[in-house]
Length: 149
Image (cartoon, rainbow, N blue to C red; front, top):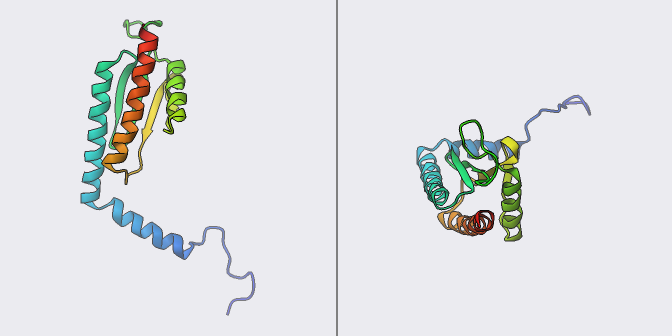
């Protein structure tokens, strides 16, 4: 047998955590699950790209799967050497705060704090994506109207 304290270690695996980790790895490596994540990401990205075309404050939509970034710009602000509006962290912060007031948590980061991060869980449903997008779209259009008029 083991004497008290003889069998210890900081990095010993907890059996429940190991079992849960095994199940998660099986799930995320399933081609059907990955295809569904890709489909959901493409669905959300296409909606965000459409929104970009409808407003002046979104300069870029980028990312892969359900990890997307929306970069905000100030169309009335300074331009870079190529004549492109600079990133606008102040507009991003405003969008973030308004989303939060409507119960949608969005992270921001990127250059100048101008990129809104859309980090949906891999298990998000289409209905949840639609709800999130509806809130986000409403906020973005409201801010765009204020910035551009």
